[in-house]
Amino acid sequence: MHAQRRGGATDRAYARLRADVLDGELPPGAVLAELEQSARLGVSRTPVREAFAKLVHDGLARPVGGRGLVVAPLELGDLDQLYDVREALEVKAARLAARAPGRAGFSQFADRFGHAAALVQAGELDRYYAVTAEFDAAVDEAVANPWLVRALSDVRTHLVRIRRLARHDPARLLAAASEHQLIAEALAAGDADLAAHAVHVHLHRSRSHFREHLTTPEHEESA
Image (cartoon, rainbow, N blue to C red; front, side, top):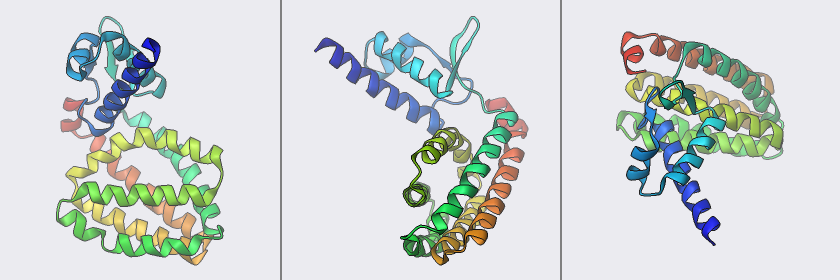
């Protein structure tokens, strides 16, 4: 029973810490101290220590000599490597989804992305991100390949932190909504070539945007 309670505390601590890292509440380079996080989360140090180990396994935290653990920094090299993998996986996923039996259902996402500009302009960014998350889930379901979906999930975990930086650039979010709309339209039409091309264009623009953001002096200071 004691082990079960500790396991539950570890899971809760991990879920909270992971969410805080992905949302930027714990920014890149932030020191992760057991005592501090134990007090903040209201759990003992053992669950926090176990949660830290999971963050390291996920690549969201890393050991630093003499400082314990820190939130993994966001570096330009990491961005390029992640996008190289993301492009290979998402282009393949788009081709598979465009041939899926239920692909016509993507037309609803084309409509929703067509109205996404209103969400961005109203500052309702959580609702906008919810639409993109539902779209990703629909593509994953259409792909019906658990290995590819698992690999995509790992990549997306790290890209969430980078994507959140777009909150400061509504213009990029508006452009991304239009790009997602074209992808959804191509999937609904069953046009695998157009879907793959649309994904390629979307990721090229996304990568270029974040390359610029990660090389600004403001980001370098915050990192």
